[in-house]
Image (cartoon, rainbow, N blue to C red; front, side, top):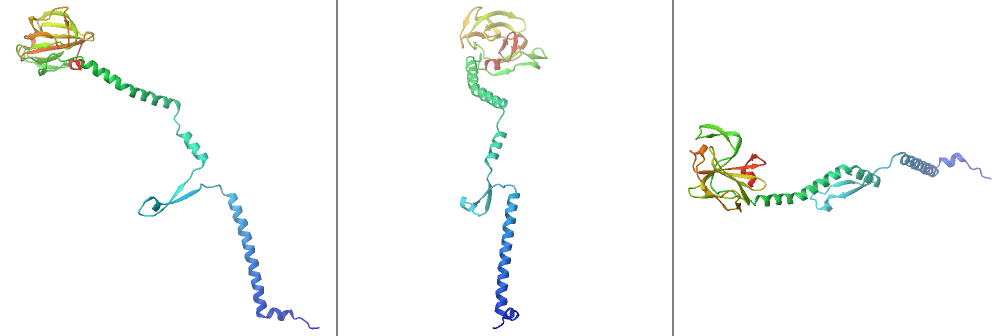
Length: 248
């Protein structure tokens, strides 16, 4: 019987290469198993991350193609954001009231415009002295500085002044400072036509329509050195007001 020499068998080159290959394969399999187990452990330990979508800018028409990362939020995050931006009831009510007020304002503006259009100026002449209840104006006739409770409207000789609206003559009187005065009640205010010519004016109780003649002007004694004019005053509840504002 022939004896097998193990030392001689391993000493042959072919046998050595075969054993080396087997060892390499076994080592690779072992490394793969260890790597797989390690990755599974890391995935379970790390928290979940948001998913991302990459959108190529070139597809949207941009000249310079670049990659943009778009973050997609979860449903839970979207719900939280919606709750944060919800207005409280008090704020919502305030916004609603503002909208209602804005909607109603055109009607108020139209009503004021209609009321203002129901009056006219007593004459279309130049206003030579304005209403100035607080700041004194110089008076040539009296040679002093004094407040002015009405407006002075230049009127030509023989020209009539007109009723500014629909009203009733309530007073006719002579005054040493403002001359002959005609007072007309227009409901919401009283107008005083000062410096009128006596005997050529309306009388007490007379009804006037807008544009009717009140009479002709004469001289206002305290403003005699000024050109011929009508001194026109307006009173609301007994207080002097700017005629231009009241008449609109």
